[in-house]
Amino acid sequence: SQQGEEDPQALSIQEGENATMNCSYKTSINNLQWYRQNSGRGLVHLILIRSNEREKHSGRLRVTLDTSKKSSSLLITASRAADTASYFCATESGGTSYGKLTFGQGTILTVHP
Amino acid sequence: GAGVSQSPRYKVAKRGQDVALRCDPISGHVSLFWYQQALGQGPEFLTYFQNEAQLDKSGLPSDRFFAERPEGSVSTLKIQRTQQEDSAVYLCASSRDSRQAGELFFGEGSRLTVL
Image 1 (tube, each protein chain N blue to C red):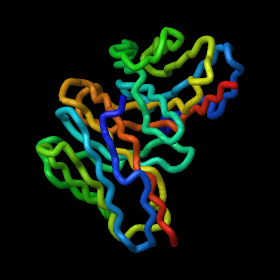
Image 2: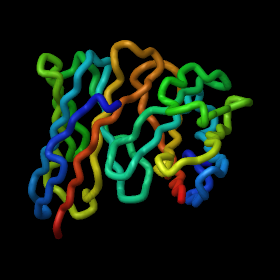
Image 3: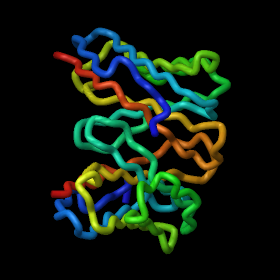
């Protein structure tokens, strides 16, 4: 079963615009991670935010975490055509001790040149 | 190798056939995960190994699914008597150690189509 729900399911923007994707989850977590998947490829890790953190930045990526609302958002600034991919949030729940991740359904991002 | 390697990349099987999917994790990575990804969905956990020990197989959908990692490196996911609902991409991932808060390194996946 999938822990996270992401919205929107699909997002279409122009190059240069910002893209925001949201993720909600159900149980307590140790950390939340975001992954990107290009069509037909494996997943690539983007960023990890721990349960005691509220915001994290990595290059053009900004992730926020609100544990009281059990939600996270991923912001990609100044998007590029190469950012076109599916984006997944994944949670490591508080009940596991070995890094098992539960993934959401994903958001399909299309960036038009 | 530099990354997680999976083979075959594509497998077509007739219903009822057995298949074996191989995963070669990053050298030295202790943890190894198998995930199943249906079309248009996120990956779903199948099983977890810490070195050669299979510590969690709670996600395996039926007893037709079997995974092993006998020497703590290469892993094989075997599906017996394949069914159409087994059609999916099977992703392998590894991480450096078994502690929390580690990123997973994924392979490209093995796409299984059962006719």
